[in-house]
Length: 254
Length: 272
Image 1 (tube, rainbow over the protein chains, first blue to last red):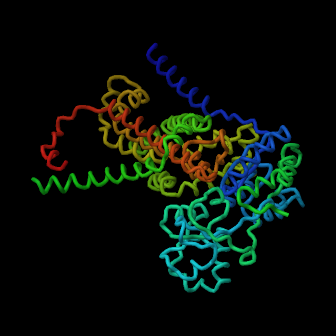
Image 2 (tube, chains in turn green, purple):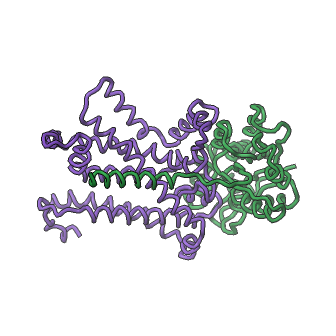
Image 3 (tube, rainbow over the protein chains, first blue to last red):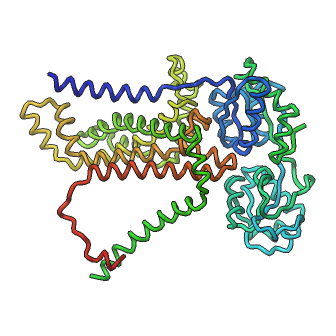
């Protein structure tokens, strides 16, 4: 029955096509999980790392919590660059990371920023005079920059007075969008988000007004035996990486 | 007549204008140089190819799984059917992120299922296969639901007639029922494909966001926003929209039948 055979052949071809596309193609010497806020700096570090050592690094980006969940499910990541200290600490405590390998690679800097060049005069004055309808912060419960923003407002004694003007972004990138689009006249964002942006006005918030936003990295057990992974961790601590980290608006770790 | 014309045309114009407004607002934020940069970059091309391959593969898998299931649900009674149907609806109502976490826990190497697959050398997570898995999971549910309605609208008598002519049930299904439900099945496939193409939440969880490996167009939008390249992100978003528009329009035009029950609306000029 030639007709039947033709149909069978057709379906076999369709199946083959679907499997050909599904075949994985992986060839990554070291795979590093990176908190999304560090994306740009990480990319530049990757290029410098390859130039310096010959090893290559591939990144998987995402929110810190998501990366952590993936690590607990045996994701093939070998190094973990988080946006906080809690998750690398947990990874270490749960035996997922090489003990003692945790270190602070970057310290986030909080800045009060407005897209309006006139609004902020380089001090907290704009916050106190209150000539605005919305001030944006990231959700304090989940975002370290949001918690820091609340600490700053408390330290200045204006948190109560501003309560009705606060709008919360789901993440620090959404908070930045609120301010960049002018939907909030000003907001607490990460310096790394506005460091390359000459427009607008800003106040660099003194570090003593909030708990330092430390971002920790940890070598995962999956990467303990991989030379490229350990070399990446060493490179991240070195002067070349630190210069890049500073350039992107973070203070380097100690 | 004029009142009716306003009542039916005004909502349509409003909906279309809002959609165009949102797309136009995106486009207005995009310098031409950035679009050119995005189109020329290997990464964007990879994302386009990855999106097309993975979503079409997911569509093929979802159709292979979903169409027979839909037929069964439309034609047969069996115990616990309402429960089964509700289970099939679950992926549609759970947030994609939740679906992704569920799949991650199911297929992690420590889990029984993931461990067994891993022992067979099948690594679905954190690979392009993971992208297809997430998209298939989301698309299948949509396809089952729409295809079930499609088969429900076909009189089972036709398949019975085919049987009296000596056509085996499988061929009656393939040669009589599937073509008769054809246009509605196509609509189901389009819906499923659209969900697969735009899938992001589950993919991020199951496959991870790795440049040039699991990078679909929605993933490229996410990665570029994260690295502060909003312009490239918008370019990728518009490429995604343009692709979807072209494919959907092509399917619509190719399958359009002249339907004499429709008439030209004499009031169009008025509304315009």
